[in-house]
Image (cartoon, rainbow, N blue to C red; front, side, top):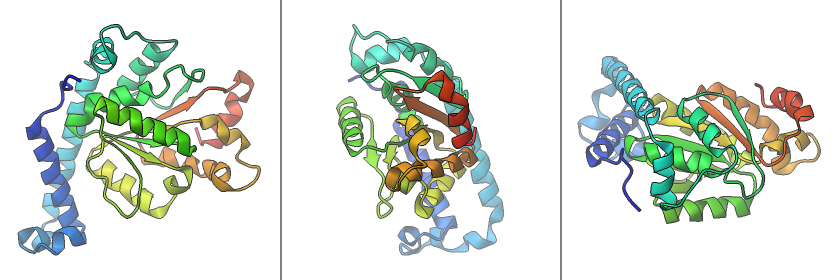
Amino acid sequence: MAESLFSTEARRIGFRRVSREWHAFCMFDSVVQEGGEEGGDWAARPSRLVDMTRQAAAEEDRRWKKMRQVDIGAELRRMLGPEARFRGVQEAALRAIMRQESPIVVVMGTGGGKSMLFMLPAACAAGAGGLTVVVVPLVSLRGDIKDRCDALGIECVEWSGRRPHEWASIVLVTPEAAVSESFGHFINRQRAMGRLDRIVVDECHVVLDSGAGGGWRSRMLGLRGLVKAETQLVYLTATLRPADEAEFGRLVGL
């Protein structure tokens, strides 16, 4: 597979440096234990945090500017081959996503190519440090998405609160974990670093049934808090009747 036009080693190194500086400011063990200046005088240097925040915002702005200039048809062919074509509402949805519109609700039938709506943008922004979070309720779907991302060379991981995911392009998370405190800290950190591009909720129609019973279906109701993440929100489903749209919007806090 050809390399994405944003994949530059210098940019990756830059984001690693910024990440380490954020870790040092927050006094994370991984940095403090190494000693040296990075674990030392950060409390006395608040101006550095202001500079880092501005730098992160500038990187995010540059990334989105490039995203809006992407030829999504060419990117699709780069990923899937020269004969690849958009299906159904794929192209219209992708254009809205690349314009940073939010919230976006996309209804596409099973097998219609919904996953490409987050895989293609994530592939475009990978070298520039962008992160896409995908909330996936079904284990089988998470495994399938992970396999497809691996095949396309997209760095995709399944969320675990015990392991860092600072440089993944896509993080897959269950509805239960998505409303946890540790994941909330992760989201806030990624947003502060200017990395969080979007949160995608797959099978979002399940929210309509989430009031009944327990387990992950009831946890779907907790996802309404995602609107506070101040990032692009994309909702994907194979079935959402027009008559249910208003109730869906109410349940997810739109």
